[in-house]
Image (cartoon, rainbow, N blue to C red; front, side, top):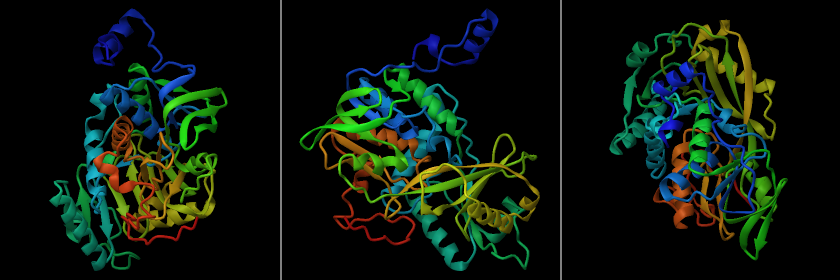
Amino acid sequence: MSELSRYSAWSIARRGLSGARWRRAWRAAEPRKSYDVVIIGGGGHGLATAYYLAANHGITNVAVLERGYLGSGNVGRNTTLVRSNYQLPGNTEFFEHSLKLWEGLSHELNYNVMLSQRGQLVLAHGPGQFDVLARKGNTMRLNGIDAELLEREDVQRLVPFLDYSSHCRFPIYGGLFQPRAGTVRHDAVAWGYARAADHLGVDLIENCEVTGFVRDGDRVTGVETSRGVINAGRTVLSVAGHSSHLTRLLNWRLPIESHLLQAFVTESIKPFLDHVISFGADLYYISQSDRGGMVFGGHIDGFNSYTQRGQLPKVQTVAECAIALMPGMSRLRVLRHWGGIQDMTPDGSPFMGRTPFRDLYLNAGWCYQGFKATPATGWCMAHTIAHEEEHPLIRHLGVDRFERGNGHDEYGLGLWTYKQ
């Protein structure tokens, strides 16, 4: 970036004293007739892919198409957690790479993404669960990733306000702590990648819905949009829960279900929760925002949906988890809640890489893991597109892995049967 375009204390002072106005963060680009790469989806993953194509590989004739406004999807509808406490080979290395990219992202983009490495504590509520966390911690440490196994007394010293009473419903046996985990401001991630990609020459085209594909046999050569036909040397699908909608236009059925995942925030209170906490008795996670609100979420809703509105039964379930873990939460008022659309695969791991259609690339199926994977996803997808070969970190995540019997089930939930 040129010195004139960089954000800094000096530029703020200069503009404040001179009265100069700030430029738009990115151009309102008009679609051209053709691009080397067209990325469908203006969320975190699509924007990161565009940025790394330009920054790492010199491919700048790129368009990002977003049917609404940039960042209107899941990148702005999550609980902002970032971590690398994974256990399966492949996942361990991928998410650690992502966390390392998070650690340098503000300087990389010249945009403060507000990374707060406050640490994440995953609780164990029984001896079996404690053993599972010990194995995961050992895997992390063997791969050079920070992890600390905590006994019950250690957990109580770290977070004394949890329910440790003799009559509590879910006794706390210990936990696994990753000090480098934390939170990132989700909107800033979208804005930072968009600004940096635009500066390198990428066209960011909003209010441009893809309605079909242009094909030459088994090769995808472009897209039909609400703003005309755009030809493409290579096309990337990065639209989260709407992936199956687009692949249906190619008569290609993906093994993906779309569900609503809700998040919640309470009224602001004084700072007291210094870490991210994950409840081991149910899928529940909580942190405190910079504004003082308690930000938390739980399981997906148990039915298929494309809505971004909350559902009351899940409000009750998540509130029960909150109070079981931290009884003091019962006195807080929930200010608002929202939903993102999760694209769930049979094994809970994503699809990344090439597809059965030539020059068409897929990034989908992130389930609960999409936001924390944003930098590494963009990095690896950009490499895959530029070299027409999957990056080593994502070779285990091919869309054909179920045909080969290679499911990647990080959470040990078992695979549901997919029939064509």
